[in-house]
Length: 182
Image (cartoon, rainbow, N blue to C red; front, side, top):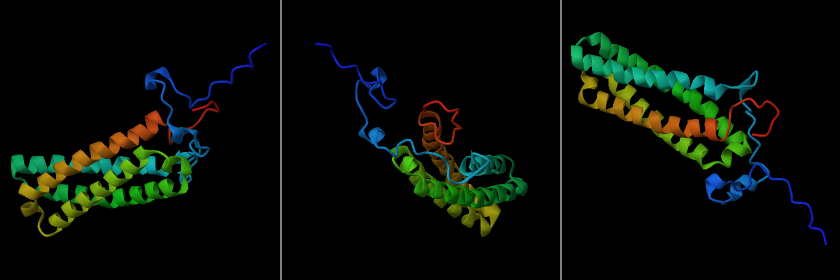
């Protein structure tokens, strides 16, 4: 008797690097449904927007550190505006990211998406509190609470970026397909 032909290997079957384990979520039919629903010319808007709040969060901490070092009120004022810009643009990027999360089933299937979402909401809360603190007096707000919140925002930015990067680099979300399997 001849053996039936072996089925072709699926992109989602176990691999040696995973120790022969199969993730049952990857077997769901919607797992590969990851095309962006909020895009301009196949470029996901969320990916375009997040660069600004990331940079402004880092600038807020940098300006706080420079104010602490120099005592120049310019840096405290710059930190206030950087924090406000980071918060406002972060909310905008968050709304677009939330739309993607809710509209694209393949994104909702991944735990890194939900972790990224929760950490990003926490980051926005810290940025909003930091900006609100500064609106009452930007120089007085820097030490100790302002710089502490700026440092905490950087930590949350790192965690949110790590999980966002995992979605891009591991799962290839937001990456244009060249027609081959992902």
